[in-house]
Image 1 (cartoon, rainbow, N blue to C red):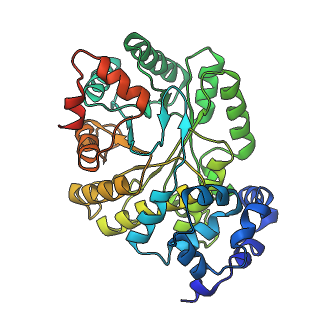
Image 2: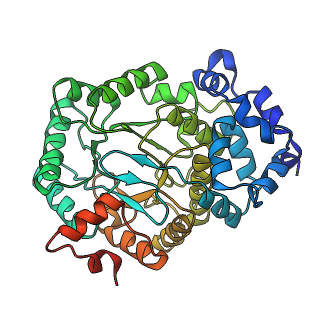
Length: 395
């Protein structure tokens, strides 16, 4: 009740992490669009919730509002919303991005095909990619987390992914999710880089723990744009608890820190952003119920701030959670208009050792909610002799 009575302007005027010592705070304050904020500038957090749930808050108005919101406002209002509120408002927010495929259109749900391998075996990765494609996965990106983060390994993986993409003429993007500096070295060596990836957090100190800062991300963004391979060229992952685990949260709760990470991502007009919601473990999100809540909070806050938000619906094996919890979150995120989810062989990542969503899970949620892949990818599937629409729509 106290939070509901806080004026939104108070959150803007009183940064929770000092402006002088934190570049993320400076980014939030210096990039704030006062004109976009003006229509709701007189509201409290509680009144803002009521407005978001009203018929006045149309998709177009929410899109226009996004530059006027700071992460603390999104986090604050999410805390006084129930799950159906988070779903209802997020469903009104459409954020569309493009590379070879168009992601985030109404009636569409995309997937990242995640063919990780514990030894980065190229044949094993290729087999997982072909299996995922046969299930209609991969329209957001074919993205590999390398077991070894070095330029030669990243270079080999990028060339493999690009050969497969070009051979089958797949309208999607490729990415190797190494550290941004490793990807930049691969890019400089002529590797076929589509998207530049990096994990980001909501404070300068937490990003320092990741080995990045805004200047480095600026450099990577510029290098990726100069390749002229696509319109939106960055891919970011986040997750509640990253700032806390690095002791870089400044006493701020983990959900607000997570929302601040979205300000970092928003600066770079990314193709993809997703929260890896249960990856850090039960020390930060204790059980399935907390993971469910956090996934919907993250998606809501990201969409409200104007991001093309997806979710890695996941948990670690020592958490009090199971695939039933993931099914529930998957279904709710599908209703909420989530841009994309993960497609992992068997839902079990054998390299990162956590549980996510499977190729078949994407078929399930597309089927029950009447959703389709990205339009370019849908057309490609229909042209394949063994990949007929019936197989990926379960009709």
